View 1 (tube, rainbow, N blue to C red):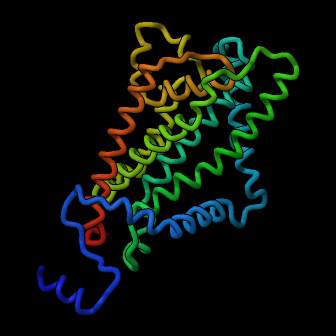
View 2: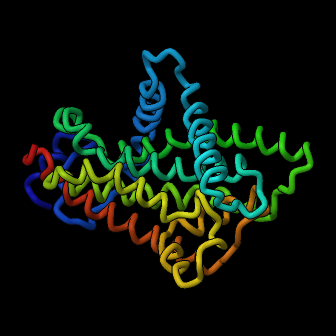
Length: 288
């Protein structure tokens, strides 16, 4: 027992905060102990997003609706890109809802250190509480947009459109987990790197937009020429979007091997992000 431990025992303290000394020093149980703080952060993120706006949470519905209408007009009517026999509104809204959650996780968690420097410098708590709360609050927005999609799905189904849910609907929680893990992992990697390379802040939004076009959102994967399809399949979000669309619309494809590859890559990105985040948080306040 060292001198510090002896002093702790003598004082009878219940909690001792020590600096981390290793990249691999992760305390998952500590996150559970701070679950009430995560809940507060989730509520803060949800309320503050559209605070002092006229339409408030209605923006959760307006954004995907306007995007869907634009995609239907530009890519469906003008460009004539096929949607595989699925009504264009349902095809685009389905992809936008799923992609929006992933993009929300990545964009918002990528600014964790810079946006919360003031809080991090004043009080101790597990820094991962912040990005985790952002991922959870994003689920609320996704739930609202999914409800909007289901309303349109019901309208088209009652009109006799060739759409129908498949057995893959049971995989939706798994797909959400993959999107959250991938978005969180990539976001905290960027967040850790921006402590030294601030230019990455300007590249994230642009990069996410480019990645969207490399994901089958405005086109079905089956419409991609075979010689280029492997490039799209390398994107871990591609099988997720395809299975999500297959689950709700019966359109698209289900490839279990590609989905397993996506899960493996998502897990690797997440593990890398957590380790890098854990390393940077030890010295972050010395660089701001």
